[in-house]
Length: 140
Image 1 (tube, rainbow, N blue to C red):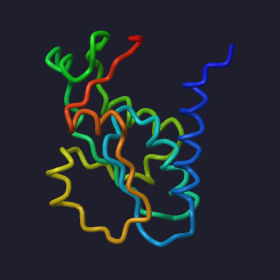
Image 2 (cartoon, helix red, strand yellow):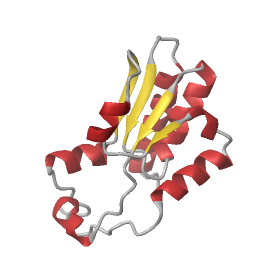
Image 3 (cartoon, helix red, strand yellow):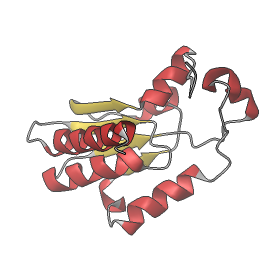
Image 4 (cartoon, one colour):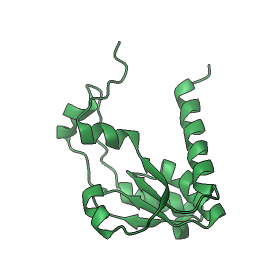
C-alpha cells in the first residue's frame, strides 16, 4: 500500500531542491534544520547553483514539557540533533555547502546579513511550536 504522507515528504523535499538550485539571485535560509532531512535536499540544490545556504536551529532537546505542543502521542527527541545533522551532511559530502547557525531564529537574525534571499524555508513543525499550535497524530 502506498503511504501518501511519505510520498508528500519526498515531493516537498524535491521541491526544496529545485527552488534552491534555481538561477534566481540570493541566498537560502532554513529555520529548523533539526537532523537534516530537508537540509540535505536544500544543500544539494545550493551546491548545484553555487548559492550561500544558512541553516538555523538551536539544537536543544525538547523536554517532556513539549507534550503541550506535540499532542498525546508526542515523543521527545532524546538524541543529538546537531550530531545527526553533521553526520547526514558529511555522509553526502554536502557539509561544505551549509553554514550552520546554532541559535534560535531570534538570535540568528542578529548574525544574519545575507540579502536578498531567494528561498526562506521554515520547517512546519517549527511554525507549530512558535504559534503554540498542537499536532495530533492518529486522532479522528
